[in-house]
Length: 354
View 1 (cartoon, rainbow, N blue to C red):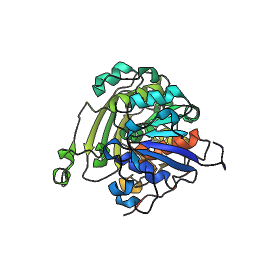
View 2 (cartoon, rainbow, N blue to C red; view 1 turned 90 degrees about the vertical axis):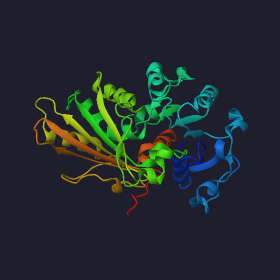
View 3 (cartoon, one colour; view 1 turned 120 degrees about the vertical axis):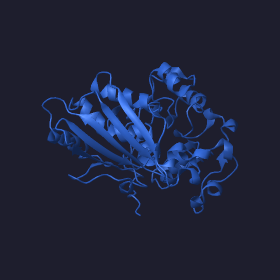
View 4 (cartoon, one colour; view 1 turned 180 degrees about the horizontal axis):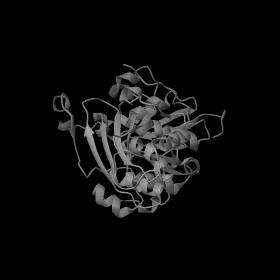
């Protein structure tokens, strides 16, 4: 759709989850979008305001079941799929095979190109492996040209987004070593989704802080796949996620080693050149440390790079809102590219504070 024309009709599958509700919140304020249909199997028949009271003042379609729709006859141009991995594969295959509708998937189903790797990490046999080659990885800042012409976009995970934004350009420019990359990431509890889980109860997570899925988090192969593409050779990482007693936000602290002859200034200049014209990625001034409150409720990524005590090592820190730049916001960036719109359209909200 060209700028200035009628609104794009969209549907959201999985609208009642945290990411789905953020998609609704962003898109309902998007000047070029009409939300034509919302799907949420567990909450079919309800309104969004019955599930999320902050939608009380907004007119939205009732939630529908995916079992009661003929996808071929659904009058929309773009469908966002915000379902857990495995649940949307059959629907997405039908949509892509029928043609005409573009799909932006926020699950892990089409991010990993190797079917066997997906099965090893997700313990789930892929139901649409033929689409893995057709999907485009939706890391907007680095893959715009591919995203613009894709019919199936696989939006990156939240942890990978926080890691790939700073590391992708550095590996592509051969400024850092591919060995000994250590990533220490912390996330708010909304990253686990809205499904009932005892581990996510307030009394379980408050006044505490702990790592989880040590050496086995499912975002590891996704991060390694994209870093290997950037470097042109296999990259392995050490990645440890942690759960923080807060609702949203990701802070990643990344430890890297410089290639011979490369300095801190070389790395800083590379990141500055890469992101100086980006609307949502900001390299902070020297010595300013990123914080999750700098990005809460926004589609921004704040990052910075610091010298270690050892001359061949650097520490990179990045902060994003896991539900926006790590999910719904990045999906809307990709939607804007697909639709010929200004990439920042609908995403102008500044971070919330306090």
